[in-house]
Image 1 (cartoon, rainbow, N blue to C red):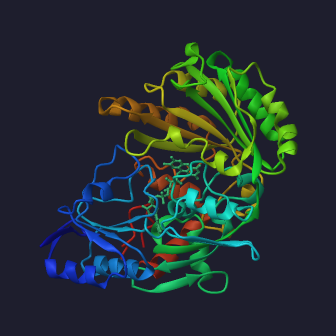
Image 2: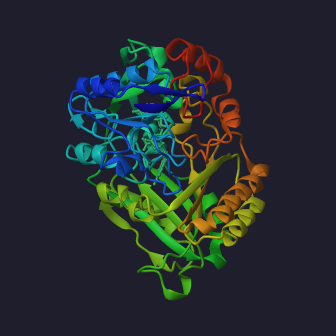
Amino acid sequence: MLELRTLSGGTATVPSAEVEALAARLEGGTTLTEDHPDYDDARAVWNGLIDRRPALIVRCAATADVHAAVGFAREHEALLAVRGGGHNVAGSAVCDGGVVVDLSPMNEVRADPARLTVHAGGGATIGDLDRETQRHGLAVPMGVVSETGIAGLTLGGGLGWLRRRYGMSCDNLLGAEVVTADGGVLRAGPDDEPDLLWALRGGGGNFGVVTGFEFRAHPVGPETYLLFTLHPGSRAADGLRHFREWAAAAPEEVSAFAVLWHGPDADPIPAEHRGRPVLGLVAVHSGDPEEGERALAPLRAFGSPIVDDSGPRPYLDIQRYFDADYPAREMRYYWKSRFLRDLPDEAVETLVKLNESSPSPHSNIDVWQLGGAAARVPAAESAFGDRSAPYLAGIEANWERPGDDDACLAWARDTYRELEPYAAGGEYANFPGFYENRETVLRDNFGGNLGRLTELKRRYDPANLFRLNHNIRP
Ligand SMILES: Cc1cc2nc3c(=O)[nH]c(=O)nc-3n(C[C@H](O)[C@H](O)[C@H](O)COP(=O)(O)OP(=O)(O)OC[C@H]3O[C@@H](n4cnc5c(N)ncnc54)[C@H](O)[C@@H]3O)c2cc1C
């Protein structure tokens, strides 16, 4: 017997024979319950803070497996989680007592260099996508850590090094194959189910399971220019102001952020800056590396960096540059964010102080430069909504010991509150904390799109099977 948590919060008892029948229907996938030797590995997600015990995990190898797993959950009215890369900070890829549809084996990627398109399975990571596209000198705008899943990232927007030149990941989504709550397998594209495609561009996992994505790809690399300088905390406010002036006039080939952080305990950080506040200036120019060096020289010229690791590099290496800073499962994470309407001097001072007060040296506050192609998409053109904010403050509490949980959560929440006077409204849906600000995201991010999103939720998921997300209630 399998005890399942249901959508209404109760439990349902399912005979083992039904689970066996599901397993027999899978075309390459497997089912895992808690007696399986791989169960603990399969239920773990990137964030070490998350410890959930699903009743059943269906590792899907094909669309047919996803179809069968969604059908099983629907029949039993089971709580359902969908897992792409398992990198959502809130851990929404897993749930206690419910069913997990795990797409991680579905990570195939095929580029079509003649059409400048790429097909990627719903379980692919950014690294999977980059490896295939770079073989053809192409790239799709994705995030800045290669182990992140493309699915959750794209459905929530997708901000990376190409955002100002080619837009967000969701802006480059041309089509998708979607398994819907009623068991349909739909092709969403400009001609078929265009409303569904619109909703997938920023509306999150509300509408079904995306088994395959089709993206627009762009010529990038193989070498591009990375700027990475680190400055002592004593220069952090000056550096942020310099960043602000530079960012306002930067070319769109460049996407950048400033990061308030503490010097890591690793080479090449000088001993006196380890564990002490620092400011990082990080930018990528996605065109010709020599042009990149010229375009980034004014940002690189700031101060006397304690580390300057700038230079031309393979785009693939740049995409992996921060991977080691975000180890999976070992560390605990809680991330929030706020779009900022400006970066006045008081905001700069506040950000510097907040970084200095962080209880963990691994935590950081990133000030993402927005604008460019990502900002040109009108709010009504995709579910994502308004893109007018010039900056995003990413608040990342990152720590090691369970004993520091309360202090680190409180620091992230205080930081979020302290930034209120500079907020543009809305938060980045992909840095959702524990989804406690769902109402804010629905109201401020989706804004005028919420009515259309709610109608589409009623059409594609009237029973709200897909609810572990910024949930749009039908
Ligand atoms: C180390 C790290 C770095 C990051 N860097 C960036 C960055 O540079 N830019 C950026 O924009 N974001 C970034 N993020 C945030 C990232 O976009 C989100 O965490 C995103 O949810 C990750 O997607 P995933 O598929 O790995 O998530 P998962 O945890 O697998 O899924 C999250 C949610 O997405 C939905 N979902 C997942 N797969 C599917 C699917 N196939 N079909 C339908 N719904 C699905 C479900 O609702 C699920 O609950 C980063 C996150 C991490 C952990």
